[in-house]
Length: 217
Image 1: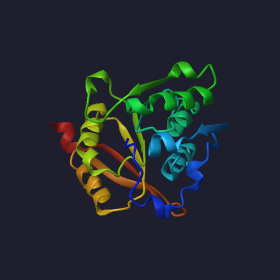
Image 2: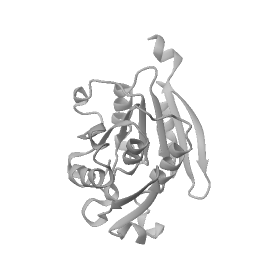
Image 3: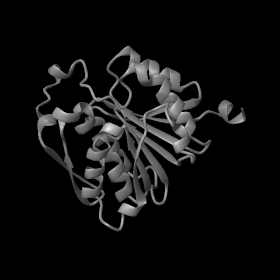
């Protein structure tokens, strides 16, 4: 969501993020993602959490065929692109400033017959949620848990987009106590469980669903 670098960016060795493109192979397709760190910062590069989440989707734990899927804070759009290639009807979202860049990646990497199954839409968490009147089968988020100021709006957005049947998958690296604090917040309205961990990148994937108590309210 945020278009500013992480505080510890200098320590990460960010050379790969300054490359103009990154290439991946998912869903039997070669996906070439354009990057533009200088213009859009973290919204315009592919983070490890997105790659790990795409790899997890390819494991086939969830059958994406014809599911209504939404990706939050999509950035480059890699996760939403992969979900679409695997048969989902996907809404790929980010803030207005990132949309032109995001849509370019989406259209470049999706075959013509799949493009009608994909929408790119503006979504600033917590705002104008009435533009999203439906609920989704699956909500995806890669590395969207890091700015504490957005946590309340992110939680509000997740609740708005969910039905009792919706599955949320969040891929993230737990960097600070505040990241863990969001997971604690998430456990209010949702049941939360860690379902995958990639030790090579230190990325966790959490699954959340509306809790039984919330369903009864």
